[in-house]
Length: 257
Image 1 (cartoon, rainbow, N blue to C red):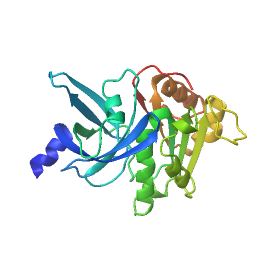
Image 2 (image 1 turned 90 degrees about the vertical axis):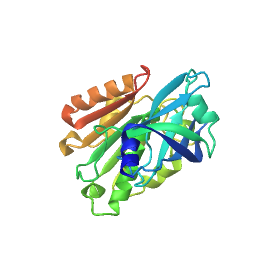
Image 3 (image 1 turned 45 degrees about the vertical axis):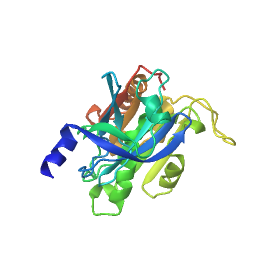
């Protein structure tokens, strides 16, 4: 058992797909069971390796969306039009299939339930995935003695339109909790009946929708490179300490907020 636990952390292992959930037209969540895994930290990621019959392999990293303590974890994957791995994971993988995975790994862009600091989460598009793991971990901590369970949590989520929102129903439920606040900014299409027109996230909206710098929150920002860089600049201009801002970027240059 000791050797198996070590391999889960550092080597390639076989995980079984035990559940598939369609999040949007181009994204879905795969629940994997990884024998020997004893939980993971909110914000970590895993590598997924696909191998072709001719020996060609492709490896991609995906953030973990879940916060479960056992041997299961959720990966939410957005299909990329020119992707080598994501189209297979989004359109072809089925329950019972097996995937080669390595991890979970990562120890910097993670939330620790022992930290009582208020937390501000800021996501652009699919960057909400690791932040969802933090929200779920916070909910679990709220029912325990962990100091982080009593910390205020806010999520600012910038997304193209209602059809592109991940975890929509669950986010609605989380927003009803006393310590959680969720603000969604729709950049291209607003929900039916909304009084707010679609708009890009700007500095004023960010300041209005996030915890003030005076609260000294731990801030986690995830999204495309341009989004992350712009948001981080706005946060510093608003008085947040750069040392309190942690960022994670996914591939491509993306677009600004």
